[in-house]
Image 1 (tube, rainbow, N blue to C red):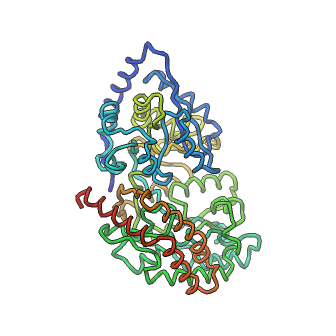
Image 2: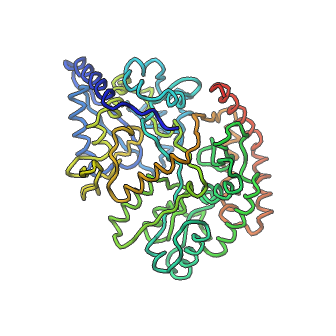
Image 3: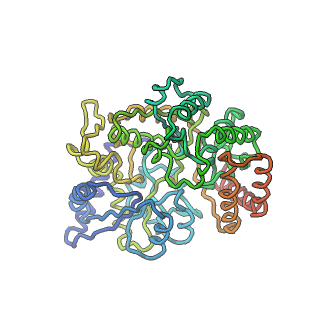
Length: 506
């Protein structure tokens, strides 16, 4: 699953030729400004870094860019409005988790099948064919993949290691040691919960761990239904049919464990009303852990770096569910993408800017690290080292997740950097195949919406241990799903998956 390694010198030399040609063609024209939309809040030193980026772009492509950042509050509606309203945007971030495939099917992005090879031939050749195939929707390319291996779906529990040491519980290496830590927190820290994460986060971590232990030749985890736990996929055996979690014998053990944890007060009875995400509660001192449903290895490092800065007396520990269950799922090809929205004023120039961001070392370092001497430095080992200015522009501070080039990234010598890099090596040793399949919800849109509502209304309380009678709660949950059209939803997913396998020659 590792991506094709690029011969850096050849790529950069060729890329330099492309950039120079772009400069020559536009030298006599007024430099246009392209609008680029990214996710997440902009860093404090955004303007300073953007100015340096524009100096390079002006020289090499005779253009400048303006970065807009989307805040996480109501981001789904904001993104949808941006795509559908015709608002000015020339380059746009996309991903499987924010409905790239659905927007592509509905004509939101420029089709790149012919345009990309013609306009950005160097980058087109540098990106593996498997990645281009992985971003296809309906047989066509609508996005540019990145050039970085990733494990965005890895799961890590993060916790207060200083409190674990204080109360003398064993190092956290398994579920039993997690329970002992939680019991110590419950007994000694009345102002905080051991955890405050609802059950779907536990299902994707503890649940998949339990099922992995009972099915060592498989790799069952959340499948094509992003942000849902209704159907799981076996990444080791792709021809196996999708399964619901309750079809595994270990699922019953999971429900009993959640009920037990809730009774022991590991989280609040109002957990489903909690609006803050688990890492925020940990940072605020309200909980002693984030169980890891949304914490991949990159986010773990960001969290540890923030804590080191804001709470220097704390110590953060982490526990990898991927290592514990014995497999790691790499990021799908559609995880971090760049698209040209249909309303783009400069589609070809937008592609050239994407190529420059991915292949030009100076631009890559500005985007990823900020300004050398202000935000970071490079040590004698050629490693990234965070400087005090990083509080205003941390590593990957632009949230430009789709512009990472594996061959240009520095090794990480900052806080938890060596541990972070070590995890990538570990994950590569237990990696399972991923795929580029994207589910088209259009044929079952009503059923998908209804099942999602049932999952939240009946599944979340059950998985959070809040239902007194587990058997009755599970029967009600499954019956409500059946009434909502779960069987039709499942059949449609299986039909589309079989067609995808046939298309891929499998």
